[in-house]
Image 1 (cartoon, rainbow, N blue to C red):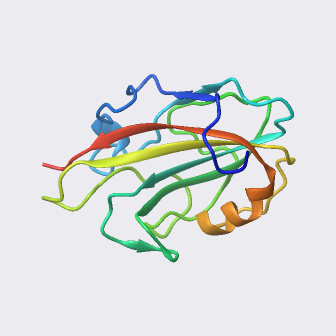
Image 2 (cartoon, helix red, strand yellow):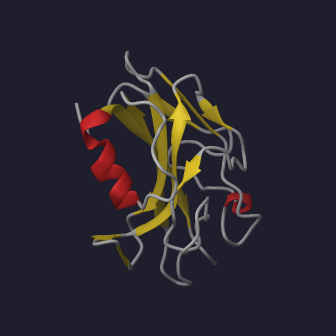
Length: 158
């Protein structure tokens, strides 16, 4: 399957697909990660990774485009949700230059941005070293991806 959408579903009690991300979960608010839930992981899943990425950002990140807001991995297969403000599991750096969640905060006047909260189901144990960048994580887990899907939220600074 590799990097293709699967039947796995990703939701949040904080916002619906395509809806505005509450200010609480942005850099202008409390900057806490939103709660996420997922279901219908493929058989054989042994761990998960979660990524939040803004493809609309005008910045170049690690050789690609967009802005990395969250890199979280080594989530055991028994875990099917993350609570609000989750700081558990291994974290990689964001484009803010620190590990952990960094909420939406597009440049003033740049319009509405989309934020993709990806969940990847992996057929490998939760054994990766902390501190992997998004690129390093994706290069490492690509052969192990069983399925993936995402929840997209939007945000615009006023």
